[in-house]
Image (cartoon, rainbow, N blue to C red):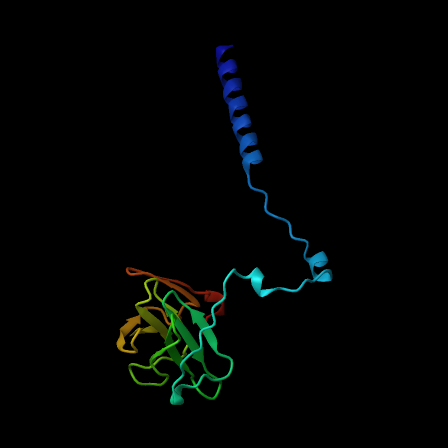
Length: 180
């Protein structure tokens, strides 16, 4: 009889703990996309922030920004990357406080210091920019445009996204879409 009472008590405590966990679970928000698309509203600049600062970029004569640039606002820098199917593009670095041109970072090509694509990743301290060099390397430049080495990966595929800290590089590699 005593065993049955202990087992029943344990089962009741277990069922109460499971039911309280269900009640404490966060319910995801439900977004009604259909009605949102039917009732579109205009987005105002004031919805994005309280202050907006215009920074004119000081582009050099030989570094005019091309079509469809990718602009990245980092903590201390503005990175502008552009290119087309005909050219491999370029990466220009500007000071964030006044738009002053700092340097053109790297170049596309086949030599040991060249990158395959001008799209870059910055490390968390903004000391270096990393560029893809196919098939399995990242090319590293400092924020003055100086080549600082390369990182080689053992696999032949490079990741789509990187998170770069002072001691590690974490990347996302979609193996299903990798070139074979």
